Length: 151
Image (cartoon, rainbow, N blue to C red; front, side, top):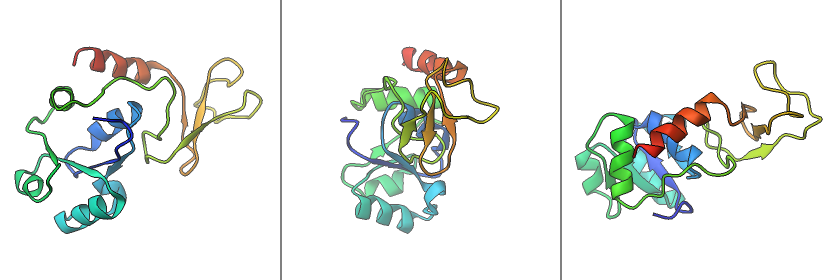
């Protein structure tokens, strides 16, 4: 599965969306896009050319290339995706906001950052172009890397 193919995840897969975004996938999440209803989710997949990833068997049957996941836990879902051919390695640099999926940009080393973020002169920092969230490779990045290593 190429990371260039955009995805849309149903309402049951919110935590998985963050992992896929950190792996470099353009991943829309149903609840972020007001597409909780099946019809809205299917329309989003079609109009934006996104591949549907779902835990809903009936919904998966409505889309030719849908990926049906059967497991509840994120590590198990990641194993299912790996078995389906998804590349599940962390991107060298974040490309998508883990919160809203918008593109991120590197923060200049001289720019001020929020109190919760490390000093950009000492650590590479990225900022979401839409929601303004700041990201860096910290403990969460390491936790995700560890989870992916076990897949």
